[in-house]
Image 1 (cartoon, rainbow, N blue to C red):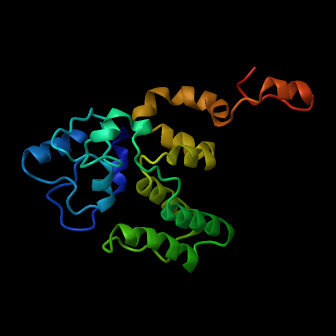
Image 2: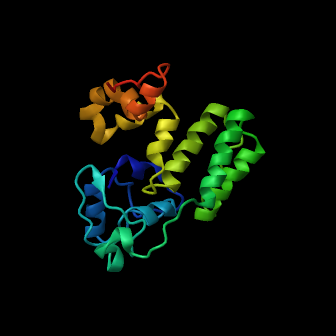
Image 3: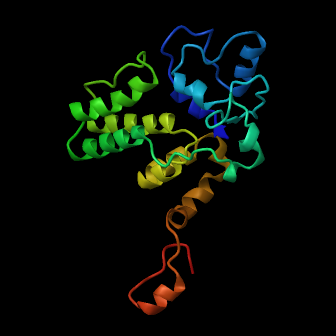
Length: 217
């Protein structure tokens, strides 16, 4: 399940059915009144979050639509997700484009090659999605690419390693949102441990120059 702050990332690109919902309960209320809470939004939202009639989230979580049939896990996926015969996508071209955009922005800056790579991903989702701005700084482009990755690859298992890769400050900022607020001090105190795996003891025994990673004895 995902947190509601994910929904806020998918911006309006057309005429909506009313005010933008501010919580899962707002989404339920709109469906109950015959309105579509995802109308006029980045279409990746509707492909990611469950809009089935049996949608019943908690106040902080949302059901996942991606990887299911019409928002409901049925058939072989429901019986055995690990041995269903469904194709598992190892990597998508959109990931290659956004990896290139991120690396090129870090090395050169937000030039036309970065813009073209990001825009290719957005245009595939919908021609109505506005292209990335041409006046972005390196920092603002970096943030744009990071949020684009979260929207494009939501629930595909990439965000966890993305936020680890981007460092402690970014990771703690993301993890401290919403659902994780009650655990923020624990996460901050144990971040270094969670960020690395322990070095096996037999390797340390072989090489006396090796020291164990933080948080492990």
